[in-house]
Image 1 (tube, rainbow, N blue to C red):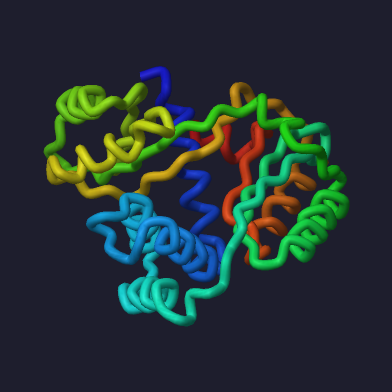
Image 2: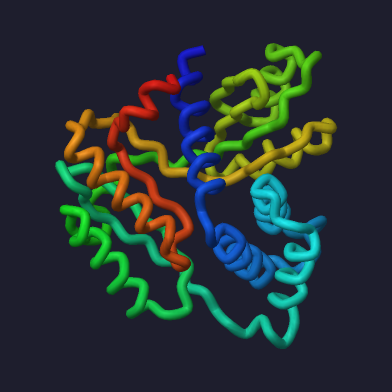
Length: 247
């Protein structure tokens, strides 16, 4: 299908990013805390928490760590409030960049994000300066079994409200509007499917080619953002060489 490269590449990129993070458990712990505060500690009644737990397991976070994080967030130790702040700016070569953060210290995070942009040849921009170049899309990744029929899973996903479908050898990639993605995820789970991840991503409407020098600066910037505890996700519209090789 036409969406193959787009959805599969996004998932592979995010998988590589998560695997490379030395502080991935810290980041997921913050997401668990925010999810618990928003909807309570019971994943059966909290779809957002279910999604984060699925993400934690996909990142090989031990069950004990997950349980401990949930208990901490719902108990007396859960009095730390994380603010969700989105920064927008430009990387080297005018590449559009969106940085999503969860922070307990806005001043620290703002200074750190600005420093990373400046250090890597970019600049922090104003609100909405690049967001119009991206579209929010819910993406559900489902484990693919050896005997699965792609068309059967596609029809199920579309019936549940999905608007795009793709697959690789090991996974299905199902996209839906942000308001619909939870219903799609829950429906697939009720049908006995194993959910590997379910989240809303910012998908660029188009990508831009960059030369080798610019690419090196963009990669350095992404690495620095990923090493920052406060940064949860980074989206960009650069067509990096490795991404093109995987399509």
